[in-house]
Image (cartoon, rainbow, N blue to C red; front, side):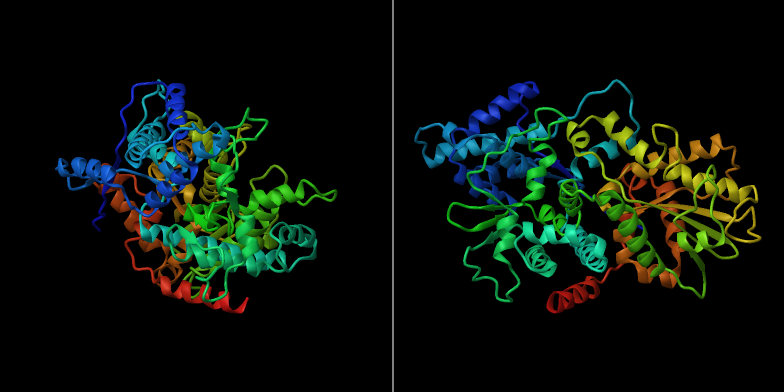
Length: 544
């Protein structure tokens, strides 16, 4: 299989100054430009409409580029977000009271964009020598939370949010203990049912591009948009948002774009609504609900454990069990969920808990561990490579108290199989081939380079546990998206075929990029018929 790539290189201003000096330059430029003019500039950037000066710069770089695998770009999604972040941090009354010609404003906007690009390309220098996989991981972890790279990826991410949202609302509305929280959600958005919220966001994000919605909703031919939802998810053009928080205890700033994630629409001075980031709006369908519901729970005398609701009850049990089961042909494989295993044997207090799912036949065992983790956005935004890696290590390898989590849970089960102590399958061959699989709910956490890092931790754990390596396949890391999209392929051909081919690909590849692709990346080479999922979602839009 030949993987095709194109490396995008962001054009920067190459400014020689420290972060504080760069911050001052950016603020001084923005103070000279009317806020509405900046909104128009960002709206054009979001849709790849570049002014002539930017086109000339872009043309110059790409005309001199002889590398067909490389493409220069003038703007990323993070560029737009940073411009808006600075813009909302400067009070309107501090705007310079001077008249500038259109040519002067355009010149300032070009300078602003190039300086912003320089700022977002910065990362903290460290003394340690990092591996190629670690460098890939740092690069993508820093940008993966705000950038989408192509139309197919945007569609996949939107599909994920739509599926998660529908099933989440169906779950919480079926259980009375969540009614108080759910009613507060309805009150905040001034709606009578969750389908008003779902239909409004879905109808916008399914267009897959930023854009404007006129105030009188004349574009809403299917009567899907709720004005109340648009208002609740919108910033006002004259809002003032601190660029960053005063400290980590007082979160009063727009760190990690949290105000933008909460309200990814701007109501312009002319009354129209500008959707400035499609992925942030799509995240409002599900990902951002965690933080919204968490704020609701903090105000209740009878608190609901929001982390347990989203992580354990919904993601790691309800969603994972349902969609993994859809991937399995019961005529070819035997599958045991966590609840199935607990019905056979309940681990004692000091024993390793049961796995999340096990699938097996006479020749192979597939051990699945599902993790619904949230990476601290402040750490990602710091661009501190060592801290980012530590965050993943603690959540997916070993906790600070050395308690097993994720990868070490998998190696613990491998040890019990190899020693003939596995409690949940009778007469299991100790020498059977074992495929350990770490499934992460959020696609944003499945990052290029991480598979190799995770496998280093995996091999280290096997050695620490004195487990013979023979028969233990390398660790596979994948996300829910891949389970959603390719369940029919997995069911028809089995996981083994795709796992083996992926492992062979990355182990024999000559180029560094292929050596560091994720299993999610690999699976995009297989046909995914989005129409099946879209048909189901559109049917839901009409019926809910």
